[in-house]
Image 1: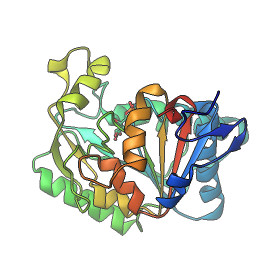
Image 2: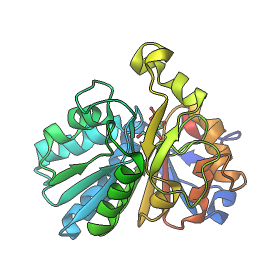
Image 3: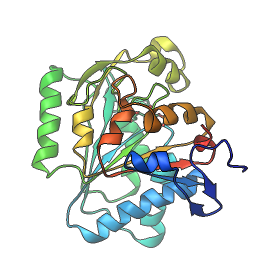
Length: 263
Ligand code: F6R
């Protein structure tokens, strides 16, 4: 690649960061492929599993983490990596979907990860609940009771959301019910088939909840994410681009492929 118009430049295997990015306190690593970037994320998880008796991972769904989960499953199967001391906490769940619904994030996590590894426990926000506030409070309490999140995985939505913290979400927001943006719902039509079938709302960890994780790794692939990444990582810190709040955390790593780096 020429690199001249790239936001974040790579030189083959060697990863470089732009000076602007260094100033924002974010570590940005650009990899030739999403598989290599995902392996770098898996290396972090493996290091935690080998070091700690108890590891709490914050986990994301969507298309972005698929190669990451494939890599974790491969390491478990082929290399005997044990997840016995791991507990997972998912970022979000669609309102109204029971766990067995094919598009629930519960189903997604079972299919992509939990059915194939030996994790100690998986925690997910419910899609069906009596009282959203209570369900969200219980989830926050569970995270605290377990000692907090050691490592949080994030993707980024086309509108800059993390979890389902849509534009306008405050930096101190906690786990809560949120109505989904039109853009987010349109992006989900490819999974649900029609816009009418896409849920109108979800429960999501808040920005404040996410920012309490000790380390955060955000992954993004493809040219379609380049514009929003540029805004989130180099633009002003603003609730209009919720991922921009990551600039304030201090222990965030951004893993992207070359296409996503062409801002
Ligand atoms: C998923 C989540 C969302 C996605 C984001 C990107 O649990 O919280 O923030 O990470 O919408 O989705 P993909 O990866 O499908 O582009």
